[in-house]
Image 1 (cartoon, rainbow, N blue to C red):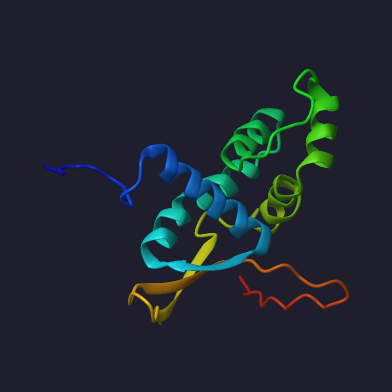
Image 2: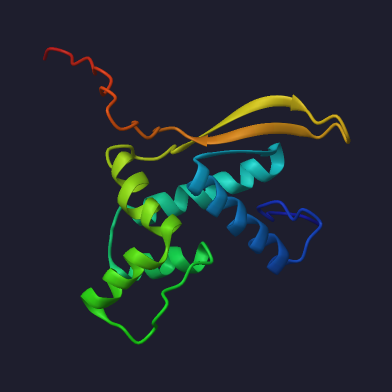
Length: 153
């Protein structure tokens, strides 16, 4: 019986499933939008939401936790403190983007960092396809920021 079992199994072993979700999370954070099946996107959403929430607190510990989930590790494991932070900042591009760019863009957002847009069914096997993307887009260099309306109190 499947009582109170959360999450999708995708007919894979736990290691294969976690590896697939880690890879999808890395690609989503790198490209900020990817196309995948609806079931994978719904599982990926919880992984990415937790990573972005973790990245809002930029410490050595949270960087190590995120690096282990994103399959990106520091080059020299013997470094500590500020030296380790400096090494982590230069060694891993997706990890740096998560902590330095994506976390800062979502600093005021309490959650809901991703959006799922339905695209229709895939031609080969009729699987429902979606586009999962980050809600807060990167502002291109030289572009004016959007005007935010304020309400009078």
